[in-house]
Length: 142
Image 1 (spheres, rainbow, N blue to C red):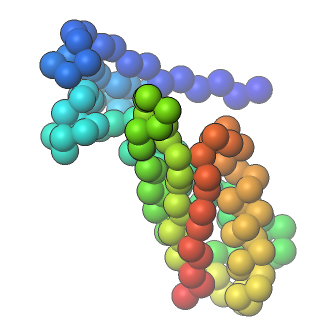
Image 2 (image 1 turned 135 degrees about the vertical axis):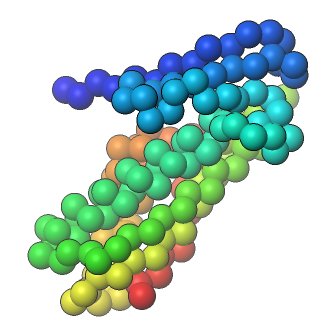
């Protein structure tokens, strides 16, 4: 079993409070987050973009693995995961995640690519953990 961690520190109330987020590897080290970075466009990060980065990277790796099972090796896979946070039922919820994928895969047919992308969307570990959100995708083979 693999275990990884992220951590967060928070001080203050919701609107004026400040937080810092870090990862086990140190790639993120005390990066600022808060109401202003989440809802007002201030510099720093927020949970939704971190989920988007996690989903995009997990999906890309899963797609590469699935393609490899068919002896296809991608030259490139570029994935953008757009995470939507909406007011819902008196609170907030991540309602949708949309994957925009563009890949260059020598020898792959459009059908091969779409099938593999669909499997990756359904089966990457991050997709599985995000079952409360509707996950959609546009996948383009270039």
